[in-house]
Amino acid sequence: MNTGIELIAAERARQITEEGWTADHDDTEHPAGQLAGAAACYALWHSVYLHSGVLWRFIMALWPWSHEWWKPTQPADPIRDLAKAGALIAAEIDRLQRRQADAPRIILPK
Image 1: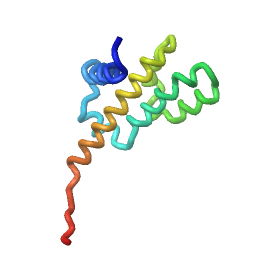
Image 2: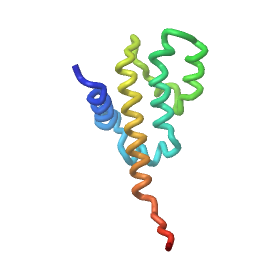
Image 3: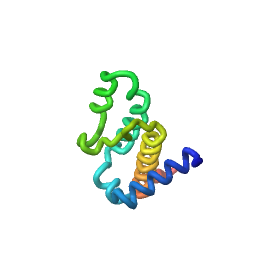
Image 4: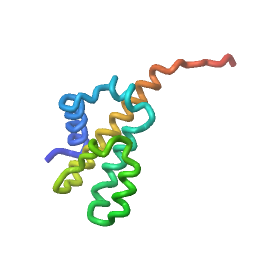
């Protein structure tokens, strides 16, 4: 059995190799936290699925992209959906680190 971090890493690798979601794509197409927002939706999904249609509508209101890109597992698989969430969080962390590395540093005199 793979650990959570292994499942997340495998999902991120799949997003890159199969879906083509590269660092450049993430940096240029999703600069405003959309990756983190999508991750939050997947993280909420597995607990909401069994509970309330009202919460489902809330998640869809938060979903940052077209509804055609919403792809929770069917039948519901919370581990798979949480791996998607983790991979999207990892992509957002990487995007923020790249942006931070590219930011000019201003050093004030003492």
